[in-house]
Amino acid sequence: MSNDVLLADAPFGEESQAQFVREKKLQDSPEWTQLIDQLSESLRDSSDIRNSSSCRVLTFSGSLRQSSFNTALAHAAQVMAPHGMPIEVATLHGVPLYDDDLDVSEGIPAAVLKLKAQILDVDALLMVTPEYNNGVPGAKMALTGFPAQI
Image 1 (cartoon, helix red, strand yellow):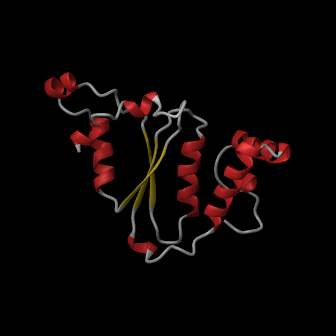
Image 2: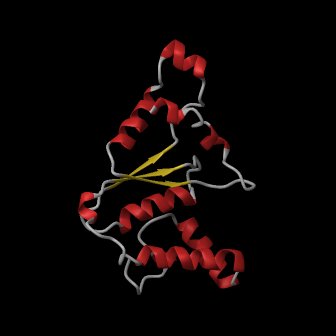
Image 3: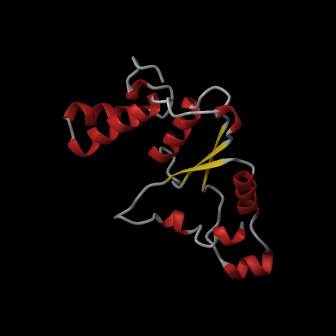
């Protein structure tokens, strides 16, 4: 992202998210302003990137909300990636709650197998997920048995 572009005007996310960023900056809301500034700086800083063309990344959003800030961040990473660094975005949509009985009787669900294949096909995994009351969100908890399935 160019240094002269405000985060709220960046070419990713939705208008409601841009408006949220504008409002929090205008209000000088301390709990949000620092995070917004850190995100803006991180999206502009590419000095640490070395040999990026050989690194394939899967950005995984742990949110199901249509206007998710986490999914917007995943797409921001995709847009802001250095030239030649392919970034794919995946979400929890379609991944069922983990049920070992169903895994035994019906096999691993197709959505889980698809996500597994996506993970195995990349060099790096970037996970962005909401936090609810200092804990893991319910949809993310659905993946409790997921690592065993990989």
